[in-house]
Image 1 (cartoon, rainbow, N blue to C red):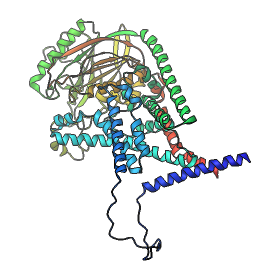
Image 2: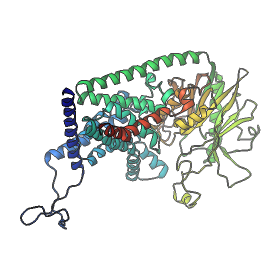
Image 3: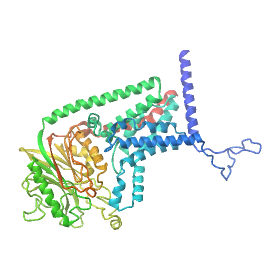
Image 4: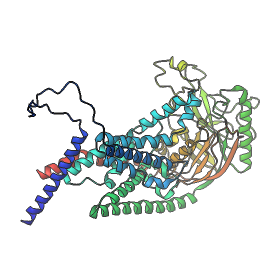
Length: 593
């Protein structure tokens, strides 16, 4: 008899929840007046509605106030997210940044408003993080500031789609679970699963993930060798979800969220400190190599490859700084992306002759990695490649890597082959290079041992898929050459660095970045940035060529779980998301039937 009473109580709770959800759905749906007869009775479902709509009912003052409060909470969340990123670097904000918009989302009277608040938070987060797009469009596209601001808005609006999809599915699952079980599934469970799923699925023009906020929090990012950066994003969302549950729930549900957050934090930090100790020990056993990085500080529109009158002086500056770095102990030297101010034939076997003004090596003997445009002498119709070359001490070219992932408009023009006239319409700074096809490693002979260097050009160092393919070659150190001069002294160079540190953790090998206007940096296999330069805008604050020497440890990478098996964590989150969206409701209904 007691069991029957208990079951009846649960059924009543579910019925009440279902009624609440149905009421909410009615609020979400557009309403229409029922046709009535002269006597006021309903004349039937087939009666025609008035053709002239009545005056639109204005929202009450309370509804307008609630709406503006929702907007304020969404904007607050967006601000917290971008302030947690480089180079604002208030990283603790990321652990509660989503909580304000959760409140706005859950209290929204309609589906449209709920999703608007979620999208707005994403819009503000992206606009604040990518504010430098406006100056890029002004410089690169020669657009007036108002048009550049519109460009920023369009980019941010698109990249906020991940937030919109997250909140859309979150609303569906929370409402459906409330209808079936009497209470919505907790945020601590759903938030990490859904955010990881959509960070993985949604393609971005400028790739990023919530994990960027934790790039300098070394113990937290260690899980990336298991999960990639999406694991860090999931951890952040779990904590955000737990905080929301603690504030809004009571009793066992609150306690469970506290326990979940505590266990997750203990596991993440425990794993982080253990792995840091293990990797530090392995790194200390690695062979030391002194690397010198030459930072050219050349403005984006004064590259010698395009300004022949500047080429000789720029090459001389690179050579003199290389000689200085070698004198400081550098055993291997890196020049930045497209820093060499002349084109290099693709069939060249080595350096130019001693009496040739284009000769690369003068005044130093260390092996050199340089960025250059390479061209096909036999076929002028083949567009040049953005390449990295390895020059041995005997002046021979040991290897060449051609950039595979080209930046839209900066390095390739979409549909140019179909519509050649686009090249005449677009800004003169727009380029179109040939795309590389193969990932390679560069051989380095050091202390009579042969080591593998893993080259990456520009933003290839922020792409997890590219990193995994490079990891298959088991590099002993990652070497990235970049030209971020388009962005000046903004947060972009720091955001680029923050995203790149995950490649070092994923592959468990050191990373060296040579960046034309900064930030050049040395990152160890635990993701610590232990030496770096600065970001500069040479159009505003001209600086001469600069350099940095630091020690790396040659340690074969590519053996981590993530490097070997990829996005298993993301796939598991996708499966769990599908289960709670489609599978769990069907199982619940089948069980109750």
